[in-house]
Amino acid sequence: MLLCAQYILPITSEPFQRGAVLVRNGKIEDIGPADNLKARYTDEEVKDFGMAALMPGLIDLHTHTENSVFRGIVHDVPYTTWVRAVAEKSTKMDVNEWRASAMLGCLEAIASGITCIADITFSGAAGYATHMLGMRSVIYREVAAMDQRRIDYAMRVASNDIAHWQDICNPDRMTIGIAPAAIYTCHPGVFAKVSEFARKENVPVAMHLAGSREEYQFVKRGSSPFAVHTMGSKRGYVEIPPWLPTGVSPVRYALNWGAFESDNVLAIHCTHVDDDDIKKLKEYDVAVASCPRCSAQLGMGLSPISEFLRARLRWGFGTDSPAATDSIDMFTEMRLGMLLQRAVNPDTFLDSTTLLEAATIGGARALKQEDRIGSLEIGKCADVIAVDLSGSHQTPTTDPVSAVVNTSNASDIMMTMVGGDVLYEKSHWNVDVDVAKTIARVIEIRGKLRG
Image (tube, rainbow, N blue to C red):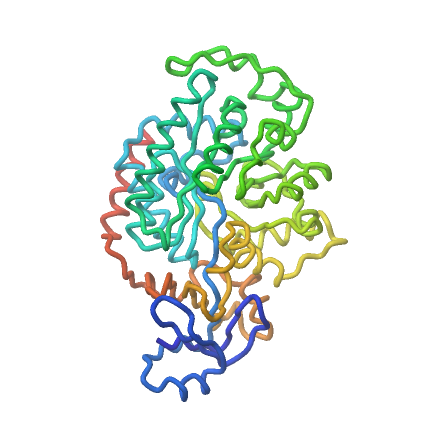
């Protein structure tokens, strides 16, 4: 199949006009001027998207698709209020409801040009959804244990889940990893156990880290809404131990407990880090996922993206939980991330090219999959999207990269392809899922949650 468009954005090389991409057997086999490729491959089916940009699919480094059902239900509240409300409402959900919610989130991701997601889940619903839809994904099984005596049990259960998920997934499109729960919900011994497991089983690790002021104050000084006086209750049969302030930053705390000892670690947020923290992240080759929209929405803080770039960290964007941001939209993430950084750090003026790289090849590097995805290059997986640039908000187009970052949105996606399979074309789905039924089921669940 020959995919043609007015603009080709390979990402790792310069954009060019009136180009084409040859896709065969799920891979990119050729790329170049459309006229040349049409003459060379006369028998190929041609799909011409006209005034559009063909580019690699967007890579969402952090999301919780199973929380899609909560969008708009807990709104306009700060982080600690939000996280407690979502946790309370989560107790009303069963396995099938989590799956329906994750399915809706993944459908939205595909329709907005996201071809690969990295999702932290306890239920496994995100893995089910991406498997059913044919998305590319990294699914991290979350592990939580407040009581030190229950760490080994929690790890055994997680290990069994990971083995089961690996048995049923398509390894070409899905990678299974492991994730310690948030610092304020987790005994520190979990970090070392997760690292040990990751090294032994050769799986990636993801962890929320230094994401909010409350977390920072809690870890370092023992104060904030997560403080000791709120931890005297019981959860199930586990008595929550008292918390002693550590006097160090969350990054140093995690480091001291062995959180970075495996080969492929992704730290999410890192909004409250200093120069020494960033040096340690670089020293241990920890990748970072910034989620500017969620961080702003919940008043969590602002990632120092310019400092990440200066330190040459592996870095990209995540959309985080739809329960906070209401949509899974990498275009808004790129644009808001760029504008916030320009506003607070004008001396390091981020440009559109840097942001588009972060959402594509940057995400691939963060997942250590840059040899397979993240750019349009011969031999890579055919994860390709077409972005409509014909709208009045984009005309005339003189710089396609700037147009994509500054003016495009999820509704401009004309086509989403993963591994050579077209999963979505404008107003048409090519998936083995009843989309209307999924939407109806989520609406039904939302009614229960609002009650």
